[in-house]
Image 1 (cartoon, helix red, strand yellow):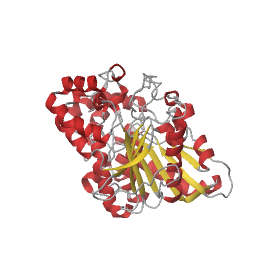
Image 2 (cartoon, one colour):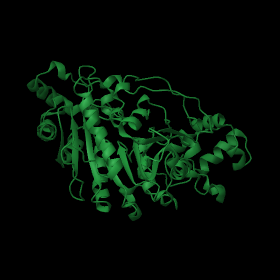
Image 3 (cartoon, rainbow, N blue to C red):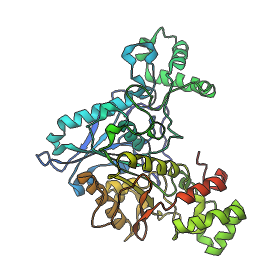
Length: 451
């Protein structure tokens, strides 16, 4: 896998069971699962891993295993490793034309992989004309980035962006890294950019980590995310979606708690009645604030305990709301929204966290200890998996296991809310809630710091 700036250490393994693998700059490789190497022309699902643009790998989480998806979905599954951090997103274009798009090298690796897939996937039983990207967090963000890169046009037909609309965390770089590159060269005693290019990665990384905080304080770019240039049109929330991307169908969504749910709830709903929960909530966030937000919360999430308001994600969801409506302006027939609102059966029931929906997408709940709830897990997994497979085949997630799932329009977000007891479409169900929560609640009110 791509060398990382920091050494991964096992932590939170119940929430996201991980695997670890040797790191090497020779990291551009694919993993492929297929039911058969025949002429089946199966849909091709290409997984882009999470970890922003600086961390993670194609095998990082146990749930990334593609065998069940290939088997149960009769599809070819591919996952991609590519350059990250200073190898993939460090713009030294000021030092010569050969580095013209160095700030997006990691994205160019993915494009290279997609070109390879187009030329070769038929030998693995896949249809090169039916490629769906799917990715979570940074992987979802990479799908958006590819939509904004002309070189990726025609290499995929649709995408599933899971918790990947986070411009506040992953903003575009609009400067080059000339200044920090020069400082690193001086720090390492290197004469020019060619010597830096051939320097030992770990010496380079150590110098970068030592020097970058001061550059960040001075608001000087240190890279780490895609670079706005002739190859990349920039964040569509700021610059609009390229009209050339209009035919790419998208499913975009998030989970109820995202980052807040990694922490225990600040109030214990197991020991509080509904009335006691309201009282505790008012005490924590204020009578006036609770009086404004709680009725909107009950309307949006009628099955939730009042104190679950403190676990509500207000980081991803507002941006996704904007993103979906903006995307629907370009692609009104094939823009779908979802919310994963299924509590996990640990700690007496914990609101879903960032990454918790991944096993359901892959048909891998059997590999994830936190999902195990008899009679519930299997049903929800089937609903989500069948929607993914239908989307991969037709560009529409409609299937017999779900109610009608209409596309979003430029004025209405039709969100499929996957809950423990049912899945249902709720048009514009939480817009007022999110606005009110942002206006009336402080970050310290929530289960964990969201920014």
